[in-house]
Length: 299
Image (cartoon, rainbow, N blue to C red; front, side, top):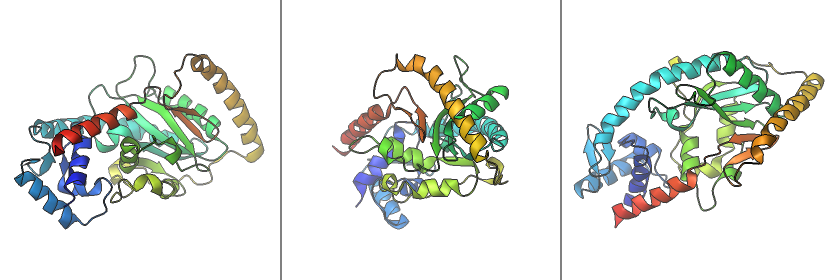
């Protein structure tokens, strides 16, 4: 009765010390599209079998109830980080060609530590990714919010850009299934969105969402979003094309120094449609730890 899928879901979030409510279990349920009543019935049975614990409305693996307090603490830590992210987005929406600014990774579901940074995901207008990255970096640097060197806590990490011409990111998925990327998408939270770019991005990734079929695009409350739409705020074609080429040439020259030292297969993607700079890609490690944890539970 969907026990394995329920346990798989809770085992994954347990990697990040994050217990789930019953409704969250249903929303993030791994690989099965089922009704809430079926999820809650499975949860009740697993609690009776002592394969799960239910405390204060949260579900967690046996002996892990302390992470409920951890979740509460991290939620409070996330609040000032969201304010800083929103401050950055308030200025970035005026940068030409920025369509979407979203928080991702742990901050997207308020599961951060004091020393955590602020991961941002940005969708840009097609053929303007290099120019947009250069301008975004400059703005965030001037605001004193950019992560670099040892300045990490509460700083914005600008490591993932995508153009609206290449919204499908399934090519970035690990062979054999990529739970981290699927849940990354399911928890992604837009602070600012223009021309429906975020919805188009969501619809373009139905393949990844097959692994979390109950998930829906996440939209934050009014206090954490910017409703104003800055439409038509793009660089003219001829001027923009010249600036794009110049921005690409400058940044590629800087990147070339690090590329010689970079280990292949690290999750770094550099193209005219995707700029992804995750030099320490832990997705394979998380997948292996998840499988091992699940095997111990169901054995």
